[in-house]
Length: 122
Picture 1: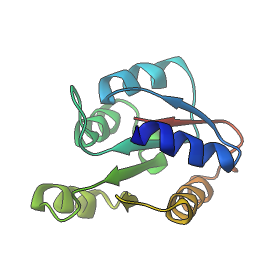
Picture 2: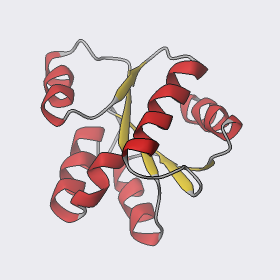
Picture 3: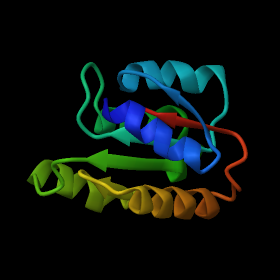
């Protein structure tokens, strides 16, 4: 349900959005096509956001600057440390349309993209 809501919010900004159920599936999608931005939940089945980040760090480090995390548990010490160590932008749940817009636009511009191609959400 959150993935659908987030996809709709991003669609309002003119983004094409693909959704997948977990980090392992996201890795598969990232092998198939290029994305300007990866929006991932931190807590997912099969491969969580930290695992996705670590796999990209090993295999596709050029994508690390394109990740934005969504989390409902930013105060948990493990996630707080991970976000601090990586410096990856994030949005805490519950989030607003404005918060999603702001963080995705900042990430797109920081990555040198104008957001004209695909977008990946967990």
